[in-house]
Image (cartoon, rainbow, N blue to C red; front, side):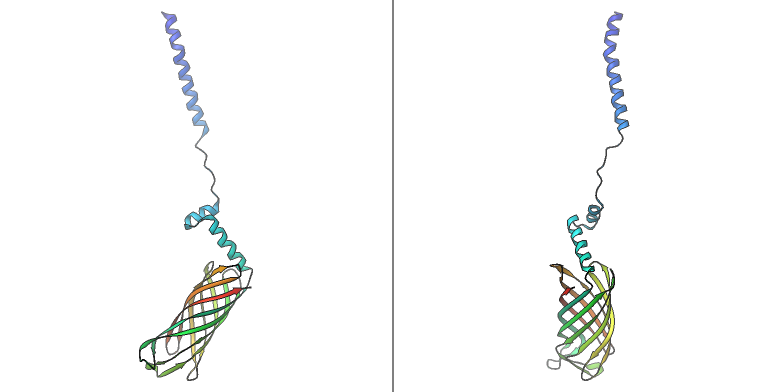
Length: 210
């Protein structure tokens, strides 16, 4: 009888020891290992952008920084809320405009430049008894890049016109789309605050950095 009990107890003891060893092994192994995620992928995930796309954008911006000069031709329309069309008599005039911009990049964030614009149209500022015909605007600007390729700019200058010259304060913003490394397309919006009235312009610029 005792021999049978001892014989039956050996498998039970052996199974218990095996279970203890398994538990000890799992506790010593520690938590499961996690694979490190590259920082670029983490940043891209936060921005909702593929890692390859983010790297390509940064590379393009670095290439643009190496080229400090920018020359662009802009076409757009200028809206003068206080303007009155002489022919139709409607208040709130839209006139086509053409501009030439030059910028010099000082560093990663700042740039300075000149802009020369001409309006192709004639209108009246009735409240000021002011006639405007093909006005020419020249302004000096300073630009600051909030993020790569998106900049705000401000500056001052003069509007030249046969009837009366006016001082101008300009504020604006634009976003650059680069292609083939050196070329760009930049839609933008700006406001010109003049001594007698205010105008708003929307435009698309095309140019090159070098």
